[in-house]
Image 1 (tube, rainbow, N blue to C red):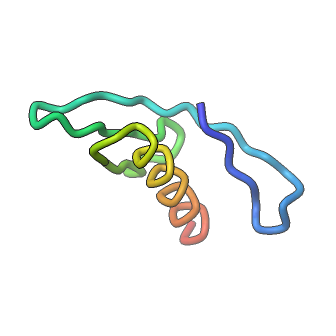
Image 2 (cartoon, rainbow, N blue to C red):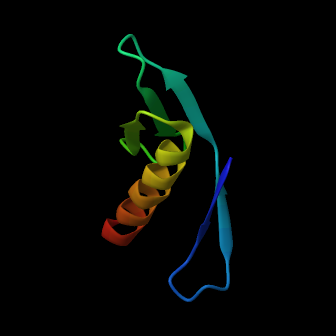
Image 3 (cartoon, rainbow, N blue to C red):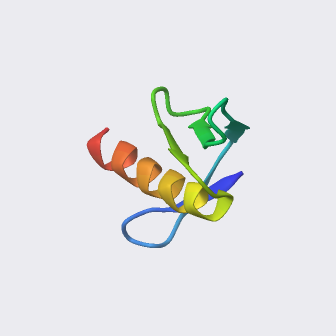
Length: 62
């Protein structure tokens, strides 16, 4: 589960994130509550960072 802070910085929203490892050994995340919000990375640390960025972009564009 990842937390996302809004632009003002007052509220935290929690999202359920599914993480899998694909056939090419990439970690892939999908944010359950945000259809189409997903990313991939070579390491878990990088995946968490990229997933937070994907959530921010999704929320900003919504």
